[in-house]
Image 1 (cartoon, one colour):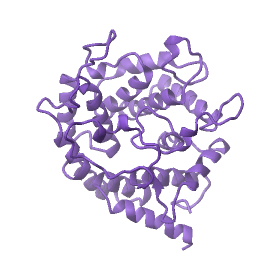
Image 2 (image 1 turned 135 degrees about the horizontal axis):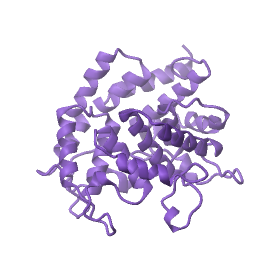
Image 3 (image 1 turned 120 degrees about the vertical axis):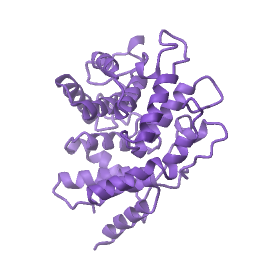
Image 4 (image 1 turned 60 degrees about the vertical axis):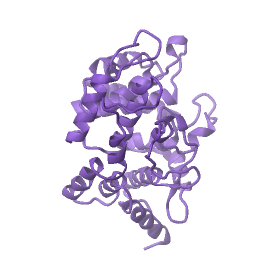
Length: 328
């Protein structure tokens, strides 16, 4: 085995020696473990480690508390984190958690959506995309929000929260949130022709811009796009964009080459990828009072979440070229 091959194996071993939330995804996406073993490991997310600890932090009404009125936001962030962990939506723990948020979380922000249930959505497509993602994953009816998002896709194939203020161009940030929501909805309910078409147009929006560059000039849109965050929240970065294309079954082409090379360049000598540019406002452990929840992800240090996502992106890229199962 080559030195690079040994490096990849070392990184996978590091992921397997981790929390169930990481381990079951590494087993599924990087080692092709038998499905029964993957399912057994996934089931542990609800009862052990990060997933169990996050579930245990709820109030009696099932919401997560920030000490401020915005419990709907922290509860949405917590459910998104549980989705990232892969909490089985059919589990009793997931059903109870989702039902309590559905029944008790309402919007407190000013506007016509004030007082609405959180799964009813609101006006900004970047938020609605996230509501669709978590609602679809956990079995909630978000059809109305999906229809709204389909009607808000812009001429260039993207979405933008500033459209109502006159913007005529898509935003990478808004677009990735909507695309992830639509894909989750399609996976949960079966994709309609309209959703499929919207996803394809959205993917072209990213690909035409090579995942990070202005269509008009070819300049880098934002240096932050080259820094890999987790949790990503509403923020776009190259790793998030590529991981979405992978999940959507898009075949990488020359337009993804620069972005994939960037992912490769992030690996250290052990094949691990660091946490960069953390978004504190999107981290559950930065917003809940007296929280005893920490995934040991620190800026500048190797990140299991970023390494997991980077390795499966590189595997996807390698397979598209007829390469080895794990990119060497």
